[in-house]
Image (cartoon, rainbow, N blue to C red):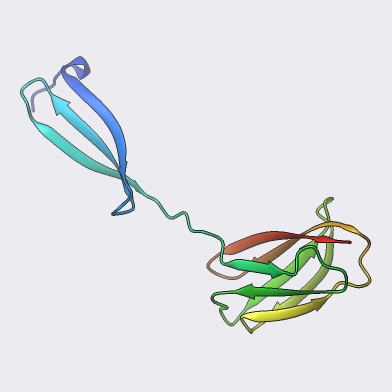
Length: 122
């Protein structure tokens, strides 16, 4: 094995959004190029929709996919859980008439993901 000085290489980091991965490009002083996949971009847009927002007495929480065991939590700005329930349908209506006015977070948790949204109660 030949050991070479790292100064003989050029390192560049990039991404390929069309194919959803990051790569490391290495070029040596002899014109050889090497590409190493450094990671996969798993960022996804939120699939959680909360409406109407702002709301006064009821909100509808809708998600594109609900696995069989999903937990819905509503939390205040102090991260206190105000309401928790299991849901099995992609669309759920929640009565918020007893909540004081303010900003609240909705967290939908299942075995594959955590989705977070927020709504305003007035």
